Image (cartoon, rainbow, N blue to C red):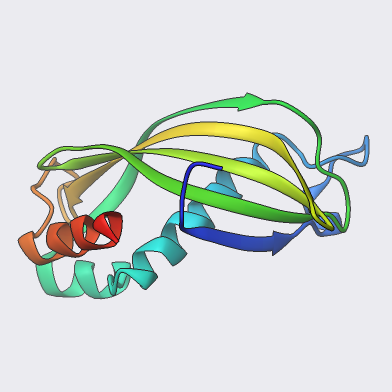
Length: 141
């Protein structure tokens, strides 16, 4: 596993497809939830960031490799790692692991790039200094 930050979720029926496995696009939802909780751990509220600074994070690009399927009721552990930071963007490596007792199996690996944009015009904007500092602090810990 790549990160000290992990978020655990359970696979629900609504997450699966007709084959009984997690629908491939749902990994992006899982990764989004993990990044949101990672930000909360850093003390960053995305809603407050928008209200206070007039900026928000949006997904710019994604790439996901799928290694094994997750199924209904599986417990998943999601990890978040900052791969690269810029003035207005953050690139993450994220992984989804199935937890089965003491055994963990890698299911998916994603590279997600988010950009900071002005909430009104959706134009690139620098990440507010205090938000940037909180992200750097959590990555250093």
